[in-house]
Amino acid sequence: MIIVTGASRGLGRAVAERLIESGQKVLGLSRETEDLPFESMACNVSDYEAVKSVAQKLKQEKKELTGLVNAAGIASMNLAVTTPPSMTQKLIQTNLVGTIHCCQLFAPLLIRKKVGSIINFSTIAVALGLKGESIYAASKAGVEGFSRAFAREMADFNIRVNCVAPGPIKTDLLKGVSDEQINAIVSQQIVPKVFQPADVCDLCEFLLSPKSSSLSGQILNIGGV
Amino acid sequence: MNLDESKSIVRDSISEITDGEVEPTDEMNLIGKEAGLDSMKLVELCLTLEDKAGDLGFEFDWTSEAAMSRSRSLFRTVTSLAEEFLAQADKEK
Image (cartoon, rainbow over all chains, first blue to last red; front, side, top):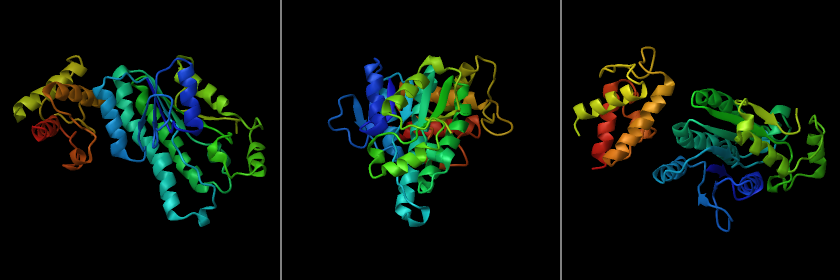
């Protein structure tokens, strides 16, 4: 079974659906799970006890976990000086702390099998230092730092940890971002095009498969920087 | 279960995960410079104790805030870990 967080929409939803199409068993986690057409559980990843309760349930049910995709996240495009403290807190709590919660609480299920792949989501905004995304980028830079160190901690257990860092991808997260802003970001990528959710799904499938067994602790920027 | 039995469970678990290569004593340090186990084995020890607690009918939670803050760390020695294991068993009675 592969856990996908943020599975109700955006890239999390796309990745969950792709994995199911490929024949994988997926458990989607999301704050709202109504109407999701696959197995899911309601879980706010920023709430440690909520994540712990999912992990305990999976252990009790003797579910065999092989992968974890931490796609739950929020974005806020704002200058740092105009971002309210509540939004700063929310970004860090969901994007960084939520990812840490899922890694530390679901990893023991992978450790028991001594095999597995974890994918954490970052953003190309970290590598590019994008204007208007400083706090969002800070939360994701934390994810990257955590992932690199966590990859070393997990290596002894044959568990790989990598980060996928997309540029602008056509999802709900981009609502409210003008074409002009998107083009300005895309022009800084080595491959200057707007990628699709399918491109992210391709990379996730690869990272979850044994074909990527040589990769751990890597930050994979979609579009290249 | 009493403390001696709890210590015995912890010592046996250490012997199991190290294939008998480590002969644990009650005073053996589990973390720090003098640690008798590496970090990988410490995680395996926690998972083994989790399983043994399940067999005994309780949940051993080695990640809880309460367990970690009760003293500097439940992982200081075999005895401190056994004390925590026993405390959690008693709590669920």
